[in-house]
Length: 356
Ligand code: SF4
Ligand code: SF4
Image 1 (tube, rainbow, N blue to C red):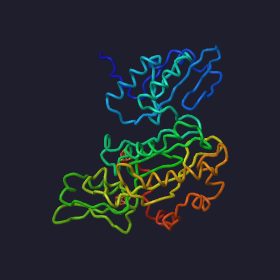
Image 2 (image 1 turned 120 degrees about the vertical axis):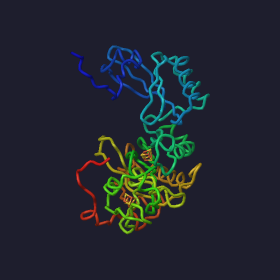
Image 3 (image 1 turned 90 degrees about the vertical axis):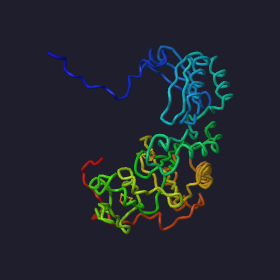
Image 4 (image 1 turned 30 degrees about the horizontal axis):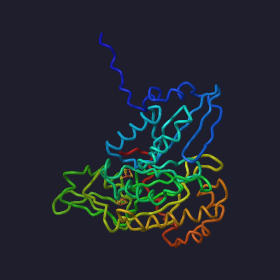
């Protein structure tokens, strides 16, 4: 009899083969840790072993030469082991304190800042952008690079009231996360439909099913099967564009950036929260996105000056009240900040049906 066909495991890889030997030997046996300086973690095991972790910022989307350079540094100045954090920082582990400073000097001389620990602004986590995704309305990684250039001091120093975790997202619907500050694309007009292409490219029933407010209907246009959008209902979410590229939603003028504040994933001190919209309609203005940088820096300045120690951005805004938040940050509060849409009860496609 043939051997049974076994599933191919393609989940998270086993981390142990790639783990620093001191980490492997002391797995689950750590006694305490501290941070000797911004960007360096120091862990002491119950048996006395010690390990220093040096964290450096990267631009995340890296060419092969930069990756080789980072790996050469690991071989020469660390113990040959690295790991990437979820925010695209790279961490080098060494089990000998005398190796910490030469490693830091080498990384800094190559242009990789040391920081991102404790109450700093760590690297902004961002979505894939044009490199790996087919539906972005902006280049998340470019906005991140431009902004982190301006926030370099706050990456390398731990001077914030608490950690600041920022995110960016290059479309409205998919892989962005919650953040103390989130910079997300915001479409402001319904999609423009190329009726000549819809019949050949789109599976119309799944596009109709995809719309969260049931604004899409099948239609015949110029004798061809196509789709039409009820523009009064459309909330310009962009969900119809991925399964139907002829429904173009990205627009150089009308795709804007919005800033959201106060999201957090952790349970520490207060429960996890969703971020809230504080600025909308900012121009999507590459290559440096100066309007976005100005708003973000204003929010950070007000938070740094006014929040109590260890208060996260959202906790601070809730304590002082959102009207005071707008006063302190100088952001205008407009009618667009009020979520008064009642259509959800009758309109929102709220079935538990999973659609792809
Ligand atoms: S946020 Fe949207 S556009 Fe950006 S990578 Fe994720 S799915 Fe693609
Ligand atoms: S899926 Fe979104 S963008 Fe497309 S028609 Fe519906 S509401 Fe408008």
